[in-house]
Image (cartoon, rainbow, N blue to C red; front, top):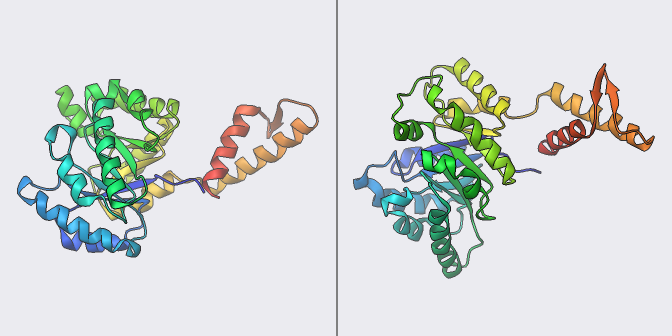
Length: 284
């Protein structure tokens, strides 16, 4: 089965109640946060609480990641030292600007993994600056640990000096570029959060836009956003039925020595067959 990245929910690492409740969350990835949601005075406490949570890994339904502090913060060495242990599936690195930041972290990570005798974990970089957007392809392709990148719209707009609106006009170029670069690097792209928790229709619309741009999932900030996000970023019954039909009739056509066929009046060729196969791979 293809690993799903439909949803990644961020849980404040310094909140024991939230960490406990996260055991019931059915997001594809639960990400314990050490960055924006944790004040500096609480970083040490958050690392200790996350350590304890990781020891209860078997009780969590989702993949477990930890969002470290940013490369420029100088806090990542302490983050990695405390949270890299059995039970962690990967880390999210916020505000990644270039491959040098990833390589430095990866070197440190490999040493800790070796000392702790654990398998290599995944790295998901978050692209949140003009420099990061320009370097997305290089970042996405710099390590085989990287299965996906995240688009972080709020810090990007802040970097650009643009005020945030629901339409996020100033981030549209970056939002469109990141999944293209990710695809070229052979990995996935996860879209930015939808901030308005009460506007579920807005969330659904935003998910559809993200899907149309090539994103496979979305960062979320509340469990109530999971069902909508999963609905949009998972094939519908109609899409599955269509994909099965495409595969069936295209293979029949090629067996007869033809390169294309028609289904319900629409021409179907190899690219449609590849799309249909990729869609069906998701549901296996």
